[in-house]
Length: 182
Image (tube, rainbow, N blue to C red):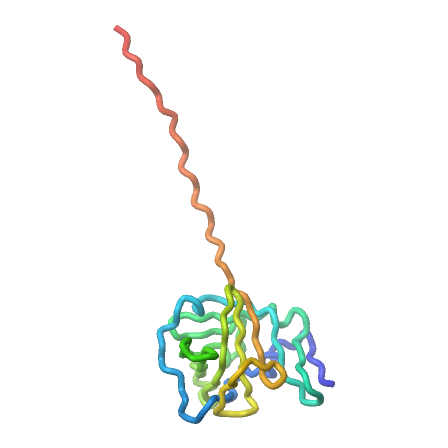
């Protein structure tokens, strides 16, 4: 059985398909229409689990504890970023079609060093503050048709909620009553 070393985050990112390897699509030419990203996907997502299918046996292999937790994915205005990223494999553009079932997403490398990586065809779902993203780089040009971790790479994460600092409360001024005596 292959093992993934904890200190080798770049290899993990490579192994889990962040290098722009082509993925699955339902049918040739079935591209998602460019849809403005809804607030439901925009924001920063902290990965909580990353898995890949195993070559030697049915099932999947999970990234070691601590690896997924060090990766965030940011979605904003059609641009996607892996944080931290790998040189050449950090910035992507994306389009989504949230009306499809399952929802569809395409990632395309935005960096010149990865332009030959092509488009990744993915599916995703958002349940409350949790996201699941799935693709299979072993079948270029095809998108997964259902969520099946045994044959696909899977990223699972939770929305990062920004903690806004509390605004200082205005001090209450003591009212002074003026009394007039004559």
